[in-house]
Image (tube, rainbow, N blue to C red; front, side, top):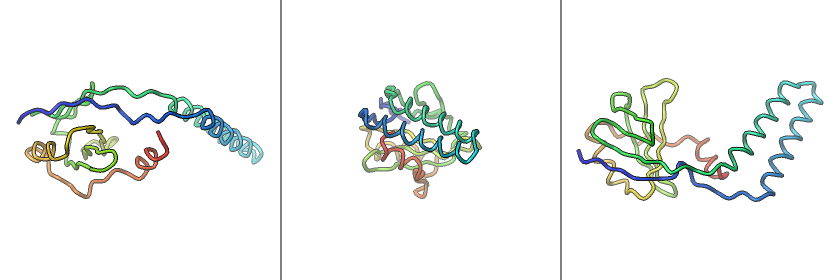
Length: 151
């Protein structure tokens, strides 16, 4: 098995204007005030923390990741996924092509790895040797929604 290596940013960065931050802040404060009016201060606190998290992560710059598929498993930056912990794979094509891995781990059932400029036809034959191809494996709607919203 010939290893394949590539570099890709962990996510596509979309510049956000100051209007975006104002809108997120106004919506968060409004929802927190409504929660306080309904006498639910715990939920108001949760909304404030979520709003701050969205603003912080919305301003985050992506890191450049080193990815590699080799005979022992798949490495993404400092994380290694051995084939013994993986059940199936699929390679999505389109706007943002990704390698989707179905894991046998309970807390991490789906691993999504951007493949950047690597053609999907290069990855499939190599992974077919050690994993089964599951064409029903799709990216969750929440991931697609977050990509659409620019996160």
